[in-house]
Length: 89
Image 1 (spheres, rainbow, N blue to C red):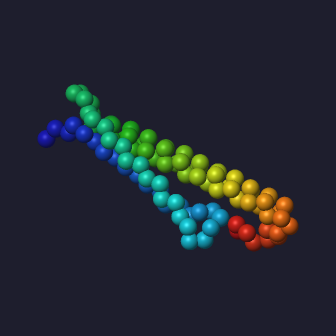
Image 2: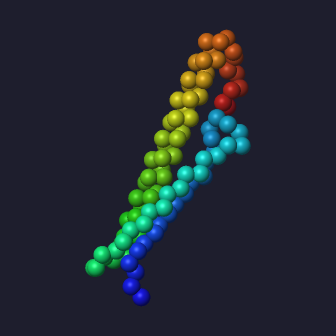
Image 3: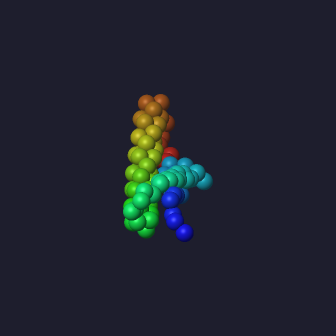
């Protein structure tokens, strides 16, 4: 058997930091075509590592955006005179 194409994937599920019963589920699938002389197991490990790094970076971006949105909403409510005692916690 000759392997000519490799597909690897990964996913993450994590809670929304500011909302109950809300999750994020980013996933990535990456496909590559092997050339003559390529070692399939080396490419599988390399591609899987890249997928995992991309997912971790994407998770960090999502959480940073959530924090920015929470801080912005907190400022809006404070401007309106609304207490933030339990919001987003």
